[in-house]
Amino acid sequence: MEIQFTSNEQLEEFIQQKNLINKNSITHFKALISIKTSKNKISNEEMEIFISFENYNSLGRVTIMNSELDPLLYPTVFEAKWQKMEYIDDEYLLISDIHKKNPNIGKYTVKIIPLSKLKE
Image (cartoon, rainbow, N blue to C red):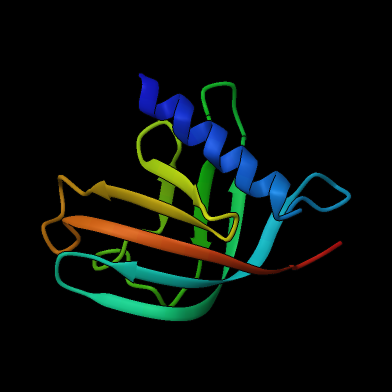
C-alpha cells in the first residue's frame, strides 16, 4: 500500500513543480519520452502526455498519447496505484514496473521530461 501513496505524491509534486496544469485544470503536455523494456528501447521521442485523476479510486493516471507506439511492445498507460513513480532531480518523472502479462515488455522504465503545455 505504501508504494501507491508515494507514487501519487511524486506524481503530484512533478505536476505542481513543472507547472503542467492549464487554467482549465487539465494536464496535457509535450514531453521527451524514453522507454526501455525487456526487448525494446526508444530514446528522447517527442510525444504528448495526458495526466488525469478521473475517479475517486484513481491516484493518478499517466497516458502516452502516441498512436504510433505499439502497446504490445511498449507500455502506454500507468497508474500511480500500481506503478512506481519518482520525480527525479526536479527534472523528470521516472515510472518503473514489470509487465507480468506481456514478456515482450517485461521489466520497464519510462522517463518523461516535460517540454511545454499544449493549451494554456
